[in-house]
Length: 555
Image (cartoon, rainbow, N blue to C red):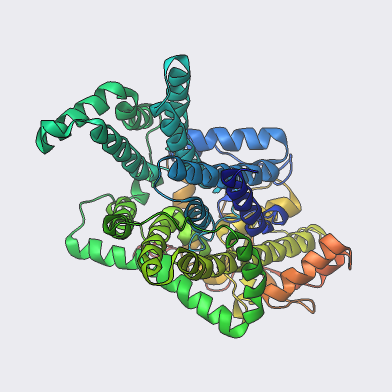
């Protein structure tokens, strides 16, 4: 087996082991309930993706997934494909261009594709995000191959490259990374130029040749944005969702601070907390990372000062660039709620670049093998451990949802269509986020059929939630047209049952039931929660026709 093939095999083994919990997590989360069918007769209306949100590529993926009758399987496959092929393409591109040795390439790709700041790896609708991110690296690999190809092979690679890049724009922020890929192409063309031309002329010629040789790369973002703005304009609530403006320096600085806190600082704090409370949690991650450490860095390669400093500079530039579009749109991440981490998918890149710079600095003192083991080894152990922690949280959340849906399905439906969920799991010591209104409404439809339900978590919404939902569902391009907040009301009490436990223990028992058949899954779920329903007006919620005009908008 060649050294490169051995490195790719190690990369795949570690990646698949790190993301193995995704295969067992078949739950839907947040907006998944709006676009995917947990069963064939479940009603959804995803036209808002085309005629409101302006996401034709998302619409295509979701439509296909629902058409197959197994949307969860399709979306999990999509996410895993993005992870596996994106990581392989990243490693192959870096080694082919001579930017990283084999060990560095594997470590770098693993850091990027196990980044725990993005907590939605198990999200099903957001699998399109992960796949789009992977497509960007596949496009970079194809562009690398096309750069040295000739004849028909070059034409085919260029066409495939353009198509892959275009599809990767489904995650709009990948266009920022795309700009860096094109910048890399410019640098490669610049290096082909003659030093006798002088820096200015050589740079101008490189720009001209880049545009002349690869015109499709220059027009791709224009084509994408043109298509969206002509045929798939955002309307209604989606035009209001993005507070696009030119932020002041103070706003940008505060936003960058929010991205740094959510993307790195909070991850480190959570890792320290887990390490002190459950140190054994890191042992399997360390055993997995030990496989990576078998790949020894090239001891003969001398790293220049520029090659040491450049990754750190690029990490800072990339961090500022990746966060800027979100800040211009008025969006910020939040680590305390998994769904609000969705803007952080690509921020493993600055982290990996920082580790690379520190590794190359440290190897001047300790040698490449020790530096790689210390920095990439510790970085990967932390990253994979926190990734698993996030997967366990999402699995526990899915189990609680399934326990509620099963309990409701076993009951006769009360004479109500508007339900408030009093979620007692929020008071437990183990991490738990209140369910979103799409989740609560989805569970009601799953249990009792396609009726005009509207459900929400009582403590997550403001008293005027019914009025705000009425405004949202009647707005142009709304995703909530099939929600009806005007019906008779009831309150669902959802409290921990005798089988409730902290997330890690709960998921461990679930795995034992599902994989080892040590218990019955249905019985396990029936003991997880205690559910009672009380019909009548929901306490603390304004009736639909009694809203105060001065009430603050619901979040």
